[in-house]
Amino acid sequence: MKNFVSAVLKAKGKAMDWQARQTEQRQAEQKKRQMAWHDISEARRPFDPLLRIPVNNSRLNNGNSYFFEFPYWCTHENGSYYYVDILFACRDCGKICLWTAESQKWWYEEMQGLVHTTAYRCRACRIKERERKAEMRRVREEGKQRKQARLVKHAPAPHSTALSNKIPE
Image (cartoon, rainbow, N blue to C red; front, side, top):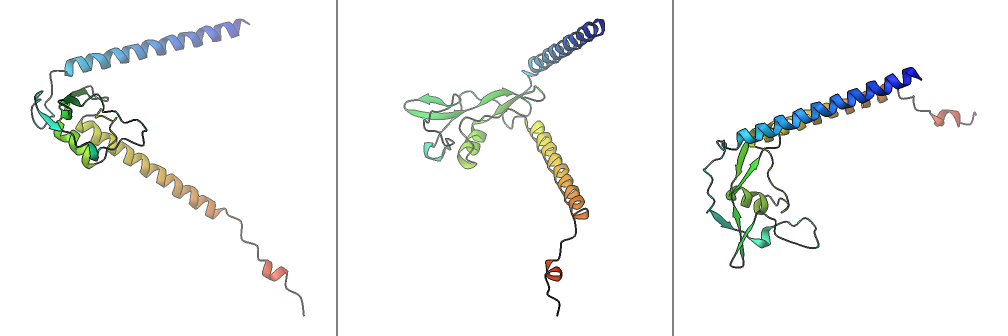
């Protein structure tokens, strides 16, 4: 009983340590994001809150939704919708980035991106994520090939029914 109680207390201590580490990590990420608000150096042009590009409704992909509603990022004026520049914090590094109205138009109308998706990674982190996914695909394919080679190597020899069913003369 004593060992059980000590094991429970030890596990509880580990859980509390884990929670403390999670809290520290969250606070560090928040601080990183707060420090990055002033840095929008990655944008191809400066933030322009007055720039508006009209939305071509017929080109939007609503993603098989029965009810189409314009997303929050579109501004509405005089019965028309417009793309506007959006500032966002990168999910990975916390850097504040600019998603330009031109980039939004390209994503939603040319590339047919779903209307309820937004940018959430800066350019550098998108490149890193693409490379990470490509590496994971490569590793998965290598694993599949190794498994296939193992299966072929250890596969039983096919039985020949032609010889066993042959009637002697």
